[in-house]
Length: 349
Ligand code: AMP
Ligand code: MG
Image 1 (cartoon, rainbow, N blue to C red):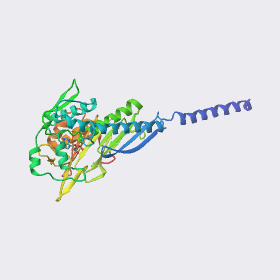
Image 2: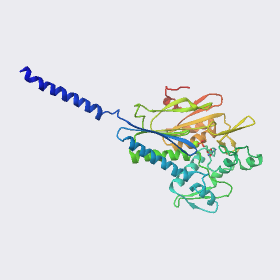
Image 3: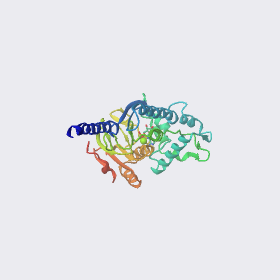
Image 4: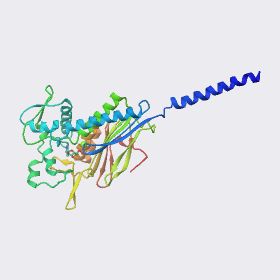
């Protein structure tokens, strides 16, 4: 009897071991495909990390490649410098009368004007002439003549941009300005890349990093927790001074260290105050905004930088689901009321 039972017992044990092995390899939720890559676009090194427990590495790479193509396509729409871009052509023609534009360009211009109103002109998408005169980030940056800054400051030209929603057309009421969307378009492009990755490829975990613009998809699937996103140390931008737990949100930073030149011991950075036509001087080194959409975070990071700590924090407290962290020249950290709950213990100030 015992001898007869033995093979049966061994068979059952064998089947159990095989089932356990199959489950280990086949149903293992830790079996996560990964994509990590960088590319050059929008004057910065862009990085993408994608994880999936349903897609293969090849499929993730295809998704990343499509997102990169979309980024380049949109750069050719929104760049004010690339001759032939949709914005470049609009800047040439809109002073003659209404120009019909692509739906996405119309949407971003409309949003930029809304942020100009919201920040009472601290964020202003009509500064291209002033930006070009300073040339910050080009091979030939310089302090403009006083006569130039005097005649260009506080023009508040954003109220001279007329939009026709029905026609999706844009016209400039005066001929003395051109649009620059450098403070908002990068965020919009990140949003579009995320939308593509999520809706066309079903990606549930990812991070897009475009210089100071970070946009996350879901949580960090590989680590099983929120993404850990750092805010750069303005004095040593290659390292983080704070990091935040970020799930499905964007963290965008505008800082003096991102683009600047030095003359006679003075630092001139790229975030301009429309009321002086000079780099904004509000005692801040950086402004980081945490919110759902990257376009909103991008516009607000620039606007709050120019508004300064007092008015900037007040504005952020009025907005839903939006937080900010400001770093001052005195080395202080200013948090909006809900910002501290996102602090990660990985790097603390
Ligand atoms: P960001 O890095 O997002 O703060 O955007 C800065 C870029 O936006 C600059 O390089 C300019 O192209 C443009 N810019 C500078 N000052 C302003 C401003 N006050 N409002 C809107 N755009 C600006
Ligand atoms: Mg911005």
